[in-house]
Length: 107
Image (cartoon, rainbow, N blue to C red; front, top):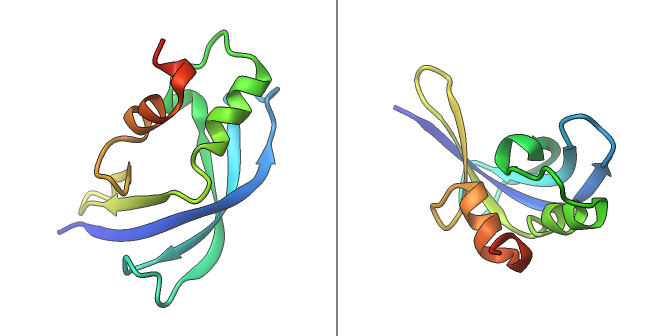
C-alpha cells in the first residue's frame, strides 16, 4: 500500500540559475491530510532539469517556470518499494501541469 501526503509550496527559498541541474529549493507546508489541519513547515528541492527540458531558456524564463508552483498543492506518493512520485493535486504529472500553465512552454 502506498503512503500519500500533501505539499503546499509557499515560496522559493533558493534559486540558482547557474547550477548544473537547476535545483530550486521551495518553502513548503506538508501534511498527511488534504486540509492541512496538522501541517508542518519544511523545504523541498526540485531538480527542474529532471521535470522539464529547459535547455535554451533564459534565467528569467526559468524563474517564471519555477514561480508557477508557488501556492500549488502537490501530492507525494511513496509505494511499498519506497519509490517516490510527485503529482500536482489535479492528478497530473508536474511537467504536464507546468506546460499547460506556462504559455511560452506551449509553443
